[in-house]
Image (cartoon, rainbow over all chains, first blue to last red; front, side, top):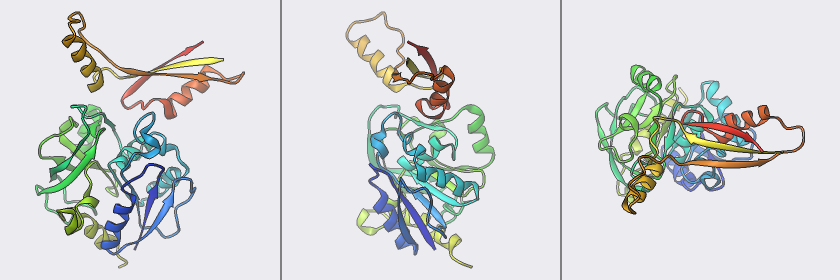
Length: 222
Length: 76
C-alpha cells in the first residue's frame, strides 16, 4: 500500500500525516507541490494541514492552483482515494473536489484544543473503524474552519449520507456542526480536525488511529 | 491598463470580521453604524490588449471563491 503526502510551502502537518500512514502499514512518498504528476501506484493522497503559501488570498486558494493539485484532481476523477486535513480540507474545497468553503471562525479566534467529534457515518473507507454515533477525541487547530455551503448542497450532503463527522459542540460556526465531508463516491474525505495528531500514545490520545487502520484494511491488496 | 477588483462575501454568508468591526465601532460610540461587511480590493496592472473578460476569468478562477464571494471589476 502506498500513500503520497503533498508538501506545499507552509505545510506543517505533512510529516505527522506521513507517520500516521506509516504506522497503519503504508509506505509513504512525500510529493512536492511543483511536481506535475503523482508517483505511479499511489493508493491514497494525503493533503496535509498547515498554512500553504502563507494562506495568502484565501486559505488553500493558491495551493489549489499548483501543478500537483491538477494531478490530484485527475487522481480523484479516476476514483482515487484522498484525504485532506485542516488546510488540506480547505485545498480540496478550493479545487472544487469537495463542495462548500471554509470561512473565518465565527468567534474570530484561532482555536487549538481537543474536541469531541461525532462520527456521522461508518459507511466509508475512512470511518468504517468507528460506529455511527461514536464521539471521539480529536484535536482541532484552525482559524478558518467554519464550514459553509448553500442550502441545496447541505441537503444533498445529508441525503447522500456524506457528512462524515460533526462537532459534538460547535466551536467555529460551521453549518450543521459539520467537521468533515465525503465526496460523491465516498473516496475523498475532507475534515478540519486532525486525526494524525491523535494517532500515537505520545499524542495524549489515539482515537485517530482507527481512521488510518480502516483505510489500510480497505486498500490492502486482496 | 489597470483594473480594480472588489471581492465581497455574498449576502447571507456570515462575515465575522465585519461583525467584529461593527461591534468595535459601536463600543467607540458610533451608534449610527448598523452593519459592516468587510471585503478585499485587488489592483491589477495589465498589459495592453487585456480585456475585462480576461479579468473576469481571473476572478472566477482565483481572485474570488464564488461559493462564498461575489466580485465587481472596475477598469481604471
